[in-house]
Length: 462
Image 1 (cartoon, rainbow, N blue to C red):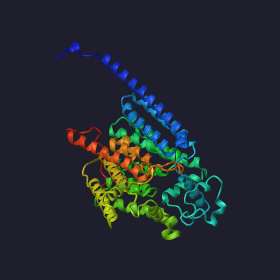
Image 2 (cartoon, rainbow, N blue to C red):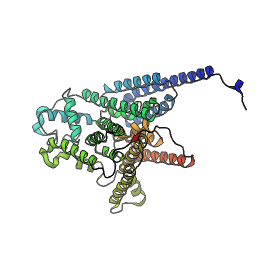
Image 3 (cartoon, rainbow, N blue to C red):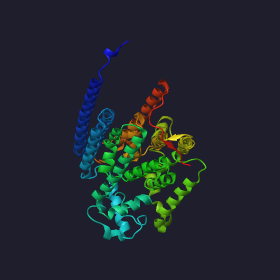
Image 4 (cartoon, one colour):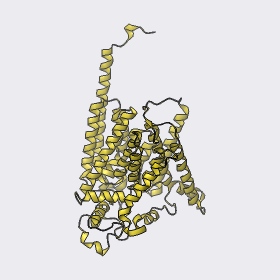
């Protein structure tokens, strides 16, 4: 038994805490320097070594972000947050003025905005159509992918965004700046949610230094940044007792990238018809200005589904593994899609029927729905996984870290590079994700149940 004389004086405890905080801040600074160095080196490595060089450095950057997330929680909050935000801005500034290395989608964004400004429905004509010859230039038009055979694929809210941004500037830099503004909104919402969860706001570093948003937003300029911001805004509105505004925001997010609709079950109360009616009205209102092309308003969607192997299931990872083992079986893709739909529907029902909701349970449900969708449909491009990146800060855990960092393995841009086959890359990516899920499940089964102190903010969407 100890006594009062054995106790450490409060002054010494304070000094020890201060020393640990300074050490954590110093280590965080070293991790920041490594992230900056890796980011600066990546364009040169990509040009010299192709996709594999990019993947290696991006994964290293991701591991630095994992370490920084752990370290930042022990650093003095205010000073650490300034460092985190400052480095995040610097990293994005570097990539803002680096030409898009890994995707040409942003050139189509600028083109669609320009076409709309000319009073032409972007779903009507392919870029190579002679009627659009007067809109072509030397900077944007030559870089548009599928220019010779595909109309745009992007839904109406994305199109409205493209139009508004190009009124400020018909160039890649203006579009990137607008998408970085969306990222700033995302970062702000992450901080607000962390405060409500009573978790250290320094966990923002998990998102802010993560390689996926760095490269897929700041460098490649993917419109998913707008979808993610609207998705988090919808969650925040609903948690704050404004479910109708939340539903509007989620509907707008789904009209940027449709799979954002997966968020709705976690926000909806069964038999509350107000939310479905609001969502339907928003969708109808946003599509209305483009309906002069009739069914053509869905753009290149069917062609894209075929190109990405989603019509036959050839590139859907879990099904491809099954076929490698058991061979092609008639109707196997239909069975797989039905099973996948059943899994997602079951998760959606669990989320919708949850009686007592908090911000923590809502984020957990949304995270599960997104991860299930991404795993089961296994997209071929890394930027689809941007929807999950805020959850590395808000929820954390090996599965979401693994699936978002591992997404960089799906990069296939350097045509001259000896690329690893996509199904091999997917096997590493999703295999690691399954291992992470198994590890978390094993830990959960072996550890005693505890109440996690994430706060008790209630959510009622009635």
